[in-house]
Image (tube, helix red, strand yellow):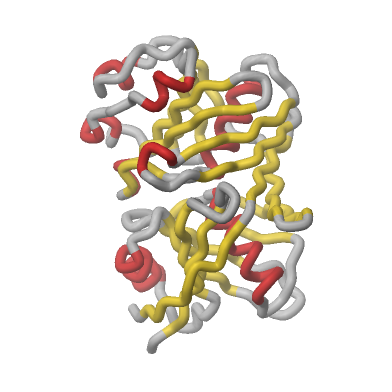
Length: 263
């Protein structure tokens, strides 16, 4: 059975860039293995499969080309955009394997709000980054999302631009977030070879992990505009706001095309 997939660009920077996402609203009769196969065929960082019923919170299954994700930011933001702007029904909440997120629409920006209950450990050495050929970070954390997100801070944007890690080494953990920041902006790159994505253009879950690391380090609230993806030709922007127990990620979405998929 052929099904349509809405292909979006999520977290665009103006009208350009953004992270590609496939959203499949017709999940009737699809097994988990079939969803995984469709996600692999589409080849995007993630694809979502939406089980929705009138009057109920839609359940969103999220797949990279290799694994199912319990939580991921750009898939939930993109799926919220589809449900609220294309239908079949507007919703202010979405459910994923990790739990429920709230959805807000602010003009052309779609936001999701997620709790900050993730376990966080300070990782002062950052030895895996050194083993992967990267400079030693100024600070580092391990955040369980629940998959492992290694979060590493560097002193300036030029260092972030020049990173060229050994992906085989980074496969030892699910994801590696490297960032530099000032008061209002951050420059971020995210590597996830274990999930089939060498480098991601825009990673909402990594932004949530960054918020969790900041809270754990004594910064109980804040906001950042995060630029990502320029190094791989896909400039993207994520808006991040956080308090001690909640993170909000938002961005703009562009409908790119429709593709027909089948298991």
